[in-house]
Image (cartoon, rainbow, N blue to C red; front, top):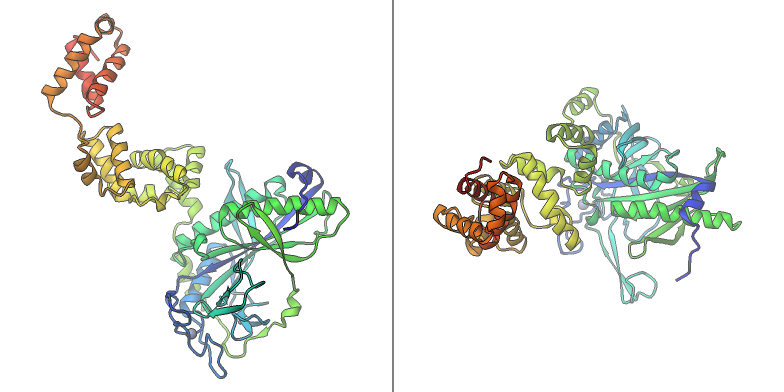
Length: 502
Ligand SMILES: [Zn+2]
């Protein structure tokens, strides 16, 4: 492995302005492929979902998937783009074994959507507008597996296997205009943009946009130019970055690498780069071709796409509430600060809290459990909240048991712990672990009497009017009942018995 020199981030920014271009590929959730009727539901058996069209057999004729076009228009509209009145597909010619036609059906100078923007919110609440160049339709390639080598890479492999199940799956590629002026915040802008785009795609219902499953991936183009200069520097293109954190790290690494190369008098090579999760570095891929090398030409086998204006307007009217506006509304409804809303968003808890509230819990309770106990567990186990195996319905049930007085907070935490451990629904955990609040007044009364007797000095203080001291007695009773008493009721009893008004 070659050692790559890096400039310190601060020094890099002291000399240069980063300019980024982000290209995001989104795999659409259509039932069938973009140009044939093959299923997109990837099965285990390689090449089981193929036909003459997606295998590129001679004479096979493609047909455009209407839902694919509709999804592209929805994305374009949500990104404030113009929708083309007429556009064509184009052949992007290059040879690669996982692309059986030897060209990718894409769009070139006639994208279906163009000239839009997406406002993204940075961590301090500032809004940064990212201009969108275009969103176009294309198809995915197949998948190569290199066998026989130690690394799984083609180098050292004895042979390669090809699976064309993925070939022809519809993709939308969304390309930004050059993102300038972000300065030191460029990596943060990149991450926030991809995060916002992912929320948008999910809200539109056109894809689940799961980055870890490759349903959404980002190419990070980056170049540096000295402060005050207009012309862009040479860019590198870090390919297929597949998590939000990695997008940020890749941008940051490339800023530091470019600066080191430029400062040492070197030149940046226009190339693709591979991103490495382990250490956040990038390494050289292939020298990047220019568009003319692909010999694009209009696809003669497909009719042009000319979406009727009334259809476009109907789709516009049907757009869901956009994520940023929805977040603003929820922030208002929940009465939380900008900072708290940002934490909820970063934790991926917005939809979970909404779903928990829909399942019957007050929103503040839903928020409390997801952002408290469950977020802590997610952090500790390195998982996302929606991967914990706890459902909004279960959290709502815990909140309900607390509201009914069957559980106190401490017991509720133990119930969630049980649910997390796979012990079943909240009620089953309560049953199995015997986690009911002691509501038997007789038993409570005895425990309170004992606590008062054992803490006579404190009891005297309370009698003397120092009501705040009751906390110590409540603590003693809670301890004696192993946390299974209703603390509020215990406090009432203590004050009652000592003849003090709460
Ligand atoms: Zn097919």
